[in-house]
Length: 154
Image (cartoon, rainbow, N blue to C red; front, side, top):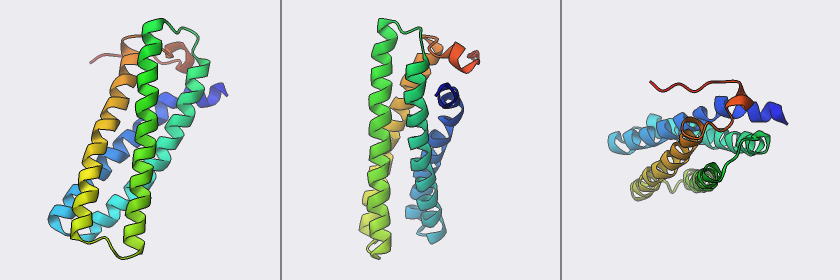
């Protein structure tokens, strides 16, 4: 499954971007009260959740493919993995809740603000996941040879 491991650095950016765009669209939709943004937010959330499951799947494979683990990198990896799992399930539950409210036609103003608040809190989980992932690559050089890519610091 080294093929899946090599995909992790490539696919991981999609859920990060999609979930951030989702939060932005949810905010715009609630503030502007335009259904277009709320519907777009729902679709982008769905795509972000699918992408996050793919990122976790490929990340688990990348973990097994990496050979150069040291103790400090393992600690960072555990934090990265914990936040990744929290992020996936957090946004999956949010998607299920939001879908339920929309289908049952209960997605009223009060629930829109609650969903927005929950989405904004989700930003923290995405940020932490990405931060620990970046630390693994740029500080600990984990997985560089597995992906064949060399990190660059701009």
